[in-house]
Amino acid sequence: MTTLPDDLLINGADEVAIRQDLALVALGKRPADKSLRVGRLLDVHGRRWHEDQEIVIRGRRVAWVGPAGAYKGEITGERVHEPDLAAVPGFGEIHKHIESSHLTPEYEAALVLPFGCTWTCEASHEFSNVDGPHNLEFWLKARLAGSPNKIFPLPGSAVPPTAYEWGGGHFGYDEQQKFLAQSLMVAGLDEVMDWPAVWNQENPSYERLWGMIRATFEQRGVVEGHAAGLKELPEINAFAGAGLSSDHEAWTPEEVREKLRRGLFMELRPHSLPDIVKGLLADGQVDWSQFALCTDDRSCSDTMRLGATDHNVRTAIENGLAPEIAIQLVTINPARHMRLTPWVGSIAPGRYADIVLLSDVEKLEIAKVWADGGPVSEGRKYTAPIPRIDWPTWATNTVNIKRELTAADFAIPAEAGRQTMRAALLRPFHWSDEFITMDLPVRDGEVQRDEARNVTKFAIVDRFSGEGKVARMFWLGTGPKTPDTALACSMGHDKHNIWVVGSSDAAMAKAVNALRQSQGGWALVRSGEVVATVGYEVGGLMTARPPEALDAEMKHLYAEGEKVEWMYEPTFSPRWWPGFPERLAFATLTCAPWRWVLVAPSPLAPEGFVNVQTGATHPIVW
Image 1 (cartoon, rainbow, N blue to C red):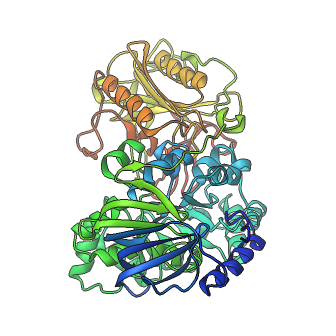
Image 2 (cartoon, one colour):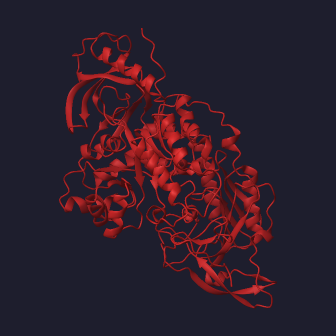
């Protein structure tokens, strides 16, 4: 029997050899390895069901599909018959940050495959910002080690997210050109988020970002977009005109309609999906070919509770989409948009033999999943091996702070002789053109918090230079009121420096030092003592452990967090606040629609307080 090359989409020569072999197997001139016969099969190209179908498999790929018994070639291996199950293609994620599961790719694959997810377009600016030079190696490692999940990396456009941030990685034209040439798995450019750097030639990131877009165009890749807050027609037209092909940030049917009309591919997330689906159906939307469903960010704990891509499909069905259309939105539609149809998106010759077997189509009940031509799960149990990966030090030694931090690192000095000082404040998800100001008391030469007015202290600590540079300021309506308490995390979108919020400077230092020792994750200090930690030892973002182990640590963190009195502003997003302020990991974003933000001290923002739309800086206190 002819030996096939490693089927990992690394180079074109191997791919040609695989295709030459598949053609001969389909003609019956070479034997196939196995077959799967199903009660019915969904052709997502034509949105039609076909009864009693056989899928003939060679290696990891489909070689032939048709009526059961019609294949004339030899099948040397197993013939599996599932007469009561319906076959649909393996589900794909058009836009997902695997890092947000906080599991390394091999464990994330074992988590999501039983939910039908067999391939992912990885929006890789998270790990890219931690270790840009090793980014592609990181995302291909699990596949090379034997994981059946396909990861198509999109190098991060936001590396760094803005010109006011630094460390970990820096991508431009040369880097993107190299990524696209290295592997057929690289599908394009991760979501372009720094909108001011796209249109404004004076923006210091303009040349870097357009260099990445140019390299992607030159090699026929897909430039993904992020159009949060862009709702006016001039901006939508400019966004589409710039070549940014998609948006996953639309929240309302009206916004989706305007962006769809301008040619954007719409990637719908679960939290806004019900309103959008209902609104578009009521408005007469018939053609759903320009849509996909996406997860974006979901923790392993939430995935264990809700599901993965199947949760998105089920949500769409529950809100009015026909099951067949909803399935197209996670199979052929995202594959077409990302130009991946030769490999994924349908049960058809040449594609990977990734098959979701449903016991109930209307309820999307998954009985079994096949990936790479064989079974990988039964019910909710993953049955394939999880590859053992010894992650190298470049992945596990990423919190580079060469000193112990002290309370003095978080103090904000006052001018001599002052009893109060004017302070700049932010609050979570502050998208206004102006920051908040407030007079705060001075004691012992330092500007103080004011718990009575819900004012606490927030800081960003650089974890890349070795120096542990600290930017600190006052925040409104978040963090602990409990004395000597602080919460710190090494996951802070999108630069992933350490953020820390606390009721005392000493507690903030202790929490950051705990992360320095653990190489990342969460640390909660309560009443001066470290009471809970969660380990993200890989990149400071993920752990190479089963999801159950991570979930147990998170539950302990939450339990200890419930013993803390947390601040919140009842007029601002009560759905996210009060309580444990986990979403502060997203409150450090610097992309649109953010304006004033806090970043680690940088040459363009020495105190870290900067307006990322204009480049303006301002003192923290004055």
